[in-house]
Length: 221
Image 1: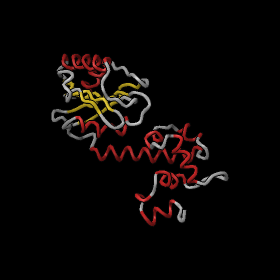
Image 2: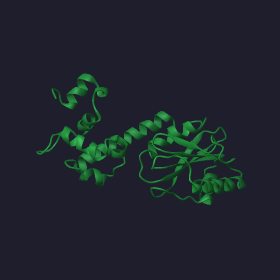
Image 3: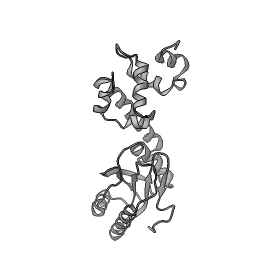
Image 4: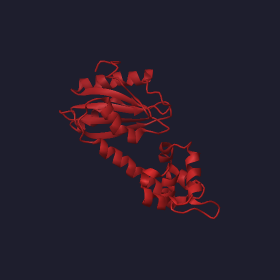
């Protein structure tokens, strides 16, 4: 290449660079056996070329990648975390009024996209249906996660929430709810109703789509 990634960024802007070149700018330098661009491309290749998979690697995994080490791994983790926070800030959460399932998808996909396991979160809303808090309830396996309805209701009441929305992810890519998802939704809706709360929706996310119980009228809330 006639220009190194950093010089290309300065002359043409970041949009002109490939993912591998942008990673090379962050990693700064290579090793005696490979240059920084080769290192970056190798790192991407180990994740199937998917940035979302790279973003989910922990410090140990990144540090063990050829030529990376703890210092470069820390830079990558900081960059991905800034990206997540930017996406979250752009989505306006918390503090955003929920107008539909797409709102929730935009708010939560930075946290659930690309995970190799299921996680369940709850959004707490005020009387204007504005999200004022959210909490991760549990972390499960690649094909399941459990919640305790009474604990979710207790949390909602301690936060003085008027309503809530349940959110979890399906790592396999199909957001269609399982029978267990339906049962847990019904149990939480009953527990919430008994305490004067409303479960507005349960949204299941995959990397590029979502399923809304409310939109699909799978269960009457």
